[in-house]
Length: 265
Image (tube, rainbow, N blue to C red; front, side, top):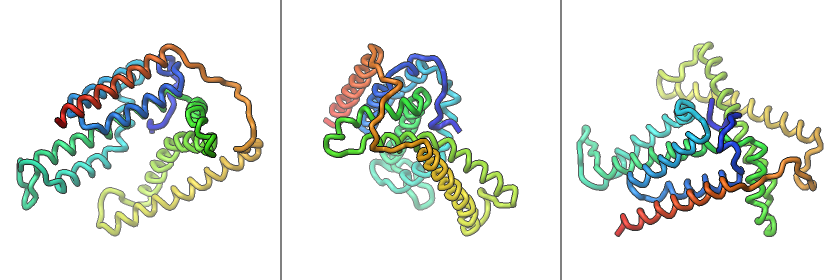
């Protein structure tokens, strides 16, 4: 499983400050939800492919990251095509008419999901879990003045990202084990499929809770306490390339918003 996994390459993206990558990701994710048409999404796609090239991550690796989302994309696409009823009718399948704007909205949703997964993959693949934690905590530090638990939230996010590949690998292992016992996840009646999914979810939950307890015991044995004052062996340093990334991200966001506003007039 590739989503959420760090790749130890030597690239420009790997050397960038995690705070710059996180802020750039947030800006572009916000930008994605502005309706600037296919030209706007093309600009974001070019930005995504550029960061992919700078990070030395192969396109095949990105496709592997998108694969787990294919089922959800197909499901959302089918639901939107048959539920949305705006624009001209292009074709009628049985008693279900398919509208032009419904197809466009469905295409936008799929493109947004692909871009979100692509950009998130670049950030997680080029940032070590420790650096990601430090970056998130540093960005959330100003909110400590109002009692926001910056360190705890950063720790939870980093642990969640770290366990995504582990849980997906565990899911695949359980599915193979259940398939060897005769459980079929692809064929069968509705109740049989529900029973098969339950046979997957129950051991996955048990395994997840066991891993969480092991991690908590390990952290406690090492004297971890969230409220304790701590020093940093590794400090974050903002460089010129981080500023360039932020300028490009802000410029992209302004351009997409402008295209969206002009398109609505």
